[in-house]
Amino acid sequence: MRTVKSIGRRIRETRMFVHAMADAHHPIVAQVIPIRRCNLACTYCNEFDKDSPPVPTAEMIRRVDKLAELGTSIITFSGGEPTLHPDLDLLISRAREHNAIATIITNGYLLTPDRIKRLNAAGLDYLQISIDNVLPDEVSKKSLKVLDRKLEWLAEYAEFDITINSVLGSEVKQADDAYQIAKRSRELGFESTVGILHDGNGQLKPLSSEQMGVYERIFGLRSGLFSFTHHDRFQQNIVRALPNTWHCPAGGRFLYICEDGLVHYCSQQRGFPAIPLEKYTREDLIREGMKPKGCAPFCTISCVHQTAMLESFRTQPKETLAGIINRRKERDPSWNVPASIRTLEWMFLRDSKTRNLFGALAMKAFGIKRSSANMQRSE
Ligand code: SF4
Ligand code: SF4
Picture 1: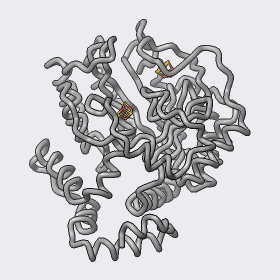
Picture 2: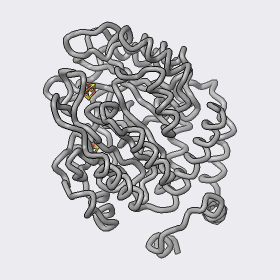
Picture 3: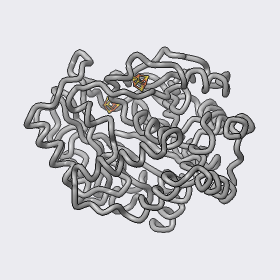
Picture 4: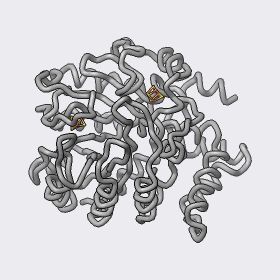
């Protein structure tokens, strides 16, 4: 069953990719908050409270439907702690009914074998857990020691893909913890990523030489072919506290929907544009997505970086793919370009006639209709 679901997921991911390449004005990712409450209280976090109720299920269903109407490819339920919502499974199923890829970001505390099986049944595609340290401390209880049994249950029962995020930065006491967490993740067959934390004033500081050593060791662990860890052009600068030059597509390709149903750029830029989702239109997507964001140079929001990289495949396919291949080769000169990347090379680095023909065939194969606005642009 796990293999069948995995193949189905890869096909739907490919569909998502083709859709993202074909239409510039639908959200690739929407992060939705079904509940602001959290059962933990990490001291660095500004995304939770201790007492708010879950968003009523009927309202959440309307929000998922509206995101589908906007053409959203990936719907991520986050929080607070999303597993505290009593109807999370229903919301996941609804996203899947709309052919969206359904994901959750959780602290993992409430996972049990039964809860994991119910997430399987709901059709969850991805689950991400952030683990901050090996042993709990006053900053965070999201600890490998506390969560390891949950990770073993996930390895045994989950039919969805799992990513474990560890963290480095000036607020993290034991840098080597990030390596231990990444190593354990790979042992269990999960993907792993590393996040870089701001300091207490929200500023990025370059990683110390010890932290940099840990970061490089994590890179040395084998990861999946398309692991963002290896292709992330942003993190190379973030770890050195250097600015990135990029356009943040939040408000267009990425949306953050708070518990009040307002659209914001991201979790750290709440209040902009703060338009009710029910009134959000294609014009809003285009206008807000194109707006320059002053916070972009030092942004550390990885899911928006990933969205921007996908978008750069559409706008600058040659440069993006060449960048991915070159960054990987710089780190590992013996790396051979695998067949799947060669296929992408063929698709994107050939002349535009070949690309257009491939695009048309892929759209047909996946049943995607190109919007009339997009057709005008491409003609
Ligand atoms: S578990 Fe997540 S949402 Fe809850 S307090 Fe910690 S970082 Fe914030
Ligand atoms: S640049 Fe980063 S922080 Fe600013 S709006 Fe975009 S995602 Fe949010």
